[in-house]
Every structure is written in C-alpha cells, then in structure tokens.
Image (cartoon, rainbow, N blue to C red; front, side):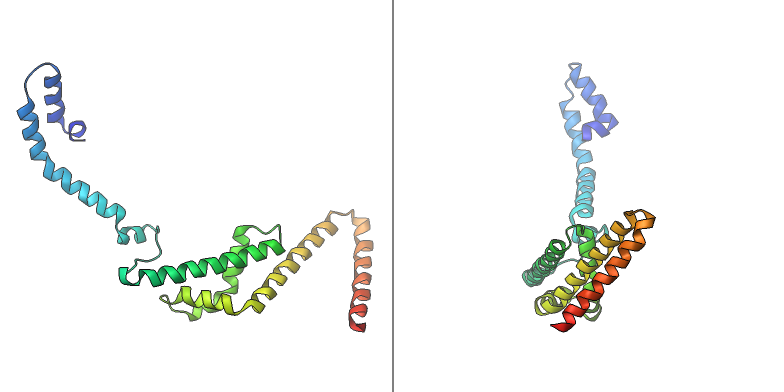
Length: 186
C-alpha cells in the first residue's frame, strides 16, 4: 500500500525498475512511513470491529460482558426459538401470511410483556411468557385466521358482478343464522 500511495516510493520504484540500486533508499522510506501506516491500520480496525462501533452502526443490539455472555445468549436463543415457533404456527394457520406480517402479529402480542420487562431481562421475560401463555397464543392465531378468512370472503364477494353481490350476501346471512341456531341447539 505504501508503494501505491506515497509519491516518493513510486519514484524510487520507477528508478529501481530502470536498473538503479535504490534498495537502501526504499527501505529507509518504508521505515519512515511504517509508524504512520501502523497507526492508521490500528485505528481502522478499532473503528471496524469493536463492539462500540458495531452498536453505533446497528450491527448489534448491545455489547456483551464476557462473564454474562452465556446467560445472555441462552435467553436470546430461547426467545428467538419461541417467537419463530409462534410465527410458524401462525403461518400454518394462515398460509397467505408473510413472515413480516407474522412477526408484526407476534410483536403486537408481546407489547405488554415488553413494556413491563426491563432492558436486561427482556429476552427472559418474553421467552417465559411465550412458554406459559399458550392459550393466549392459540387465541391470537385463531383471530389472525378469522381476519384472513374475512378478508378472503370480502375479496370474493367484491369480485362478483354487482347484481349478484346482494343475493350472495343475503344467502350468507341466512346460512349464518341457520348455523347459529344449530350451534345453540347442541
């Protein structure tokens, strides 16, 4: 890199390729420039790979303390596995749901947990909540499934010719009444 960036070294290289013996001058110039290049490379590495810099650019959420890293990673992985499991179950119930929509639904489900948990215990609180509240998760999945069905029915009815829409809606209302009466009879 020195030979590319330093004008004096480029001139010495040109003279060396012409047959002159400038090896001592090149070595002296490299020795003179080496501390500056070393300092720049250390500064570059510090800016590139340090946790403070990585947090600053958003590559990581937080810096880890080595002594606590195993516990942190345990809860982080456990949380992610639980969240991914809920998203998979949701997407299985609603096949048209995208991963982003499932992630948003899970985030909405966890709002209360996240607001009550501190930053340090957030992963543990979320993981344990997801493990302990399966009934609420099932209810949310059912709610998302029903929303998707309502949207699908609306799209189907909207795609009908306008003169047929009222007839189909009337038939659906009648069907719903009969189904409700049958459910009440049981």
